[in-house]
Every structure is written in C-alpha cells, then in structure tokens.
Length: 269
Image 1 (spheres, rainbow, N blue to C red):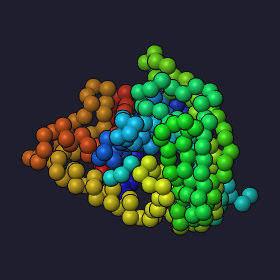
Image 2 (tube, helix red, strand yellow):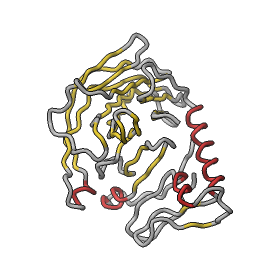
Image 3 (cartoon, rainbow, N blue to C red):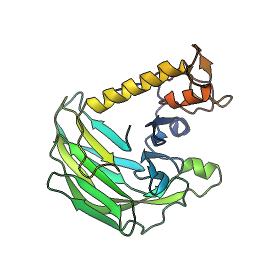
C-alpha cells in the first residue's frame, strides 16, 4: 500500500480543500479520483470509474461513499480498506452512492435510482438499475457484513463544474448500506467490481500488488513528477533514460494536488 505524506490546508480554508485533487489509475483506462475534502467537484470524479468494453467507455459507477463510525457511546475493481489504528472497537456503516452513467453523460436527475438488488448467501451484493445493462458487485471481507437495502437520494453540487459554467447539480441515489463491527488493528476491505459475481479480497495482497505495479511504472518511465500548479501541469526532475516515450510516464502519476499557487512538494508513489 502506498502512503502519501500530504500537507493539509488550514481547516477553515474551504477553497484549498476543494482545489486539491487526487487520482489513482488501474492501467486499463479506469480510475478513482476526487478531492482531499472527500467531495466530488467535477462530473468525472468518482470512487470507482471503470473503463468498460460493453457498454463502451468510462462510467461513473460509484461517486462517493458515505461513512459513519459508530462507537459504543489490474482489474475493473476497487478496494477500500478500513482499519482502526487507535482507539476502541466500533461499528462502521458505509453507504455507496451510484450514478451509473458515462463520465461525459448528462448528470442524473431526481428519481433515477430504481435499483435491482440481489444478495447471495455468501453476503455478496449485486446492484444494477432496472432495465440497465450495467451492474456492480460489492462485498465486505473478512467481516460478516450484510447489505441492508434502504434507498436514499441526495443532492450533489459539483463546485468545479459550477465555476466553469457547466451543469453542476446532480441527484445521487444509494440502494442501501453495509454495516459491520470493526476491531482495532483488524483491517477490513470492501471490494467493488464489474468483473465478478462473487468477489473476494485479501486485506493486504491487493494493496501490495498495486504498490509494486506503480513502482514498476516509475522505474520504466524514469521520471518523478511535482504536483500540478497554475503555471505548469507537471515538472520533470531526475530524468533517467526512459524506456518509453515521456507521454507514457503520465501513467505513473498516482496522486497530485491541483493548486492555484506554488507547489508544496513532490508526489511520491
């Protein structure tokens, strides 16, 4: 797993929190991206945006995850790991909001969330829109987390699209939520995929595999990147005879904050 040491803006600096963005790619044209504030500000932000062959193109399947911590008193797959590093045991509730649209399609309108939900005996959950060809499989492992059907709709304002003068209001629907007990220092992974009906995941192996994949891309490219600034998109340092053309090196950029001022440091894979 890659851990980035990022200097966060001041707590009351709303603009800075919305302006600093992150991006993780899967090598298949899919990605996850958003802001460090945890909100989507662009129409193509999302926690799970796979690049599919049918229907063709990148689709925003999961735009956000609403999470509640309840304390007593190379696939089209995304893994989200939850772990209590300090403090007592707790229960955690995670509610996925699912736009189910192409990234460049019109934003969803209220009432679109007519979901078909199938829950199997092994606690896997398959979700799709009625009369829609796409579907998404979700599972929490190794915890015994059952999906609780409870439809909810929320309004979303895409701030960056508003600034650019584009349609910026989207209705987001959620078919339900997962809830499970979480013990300290016992990680749990939620897996979301379009490739399996009954996904499984380990708590460490997928993250280590991703770290190695990114390290290999960096080694092949021979390029390190500074974060984007208002004056230049990327700044190369330590050029070391790349094995591929420089454009390929952009695939190794795991994360960068988009700032309006000067950069604060390098994004290190």
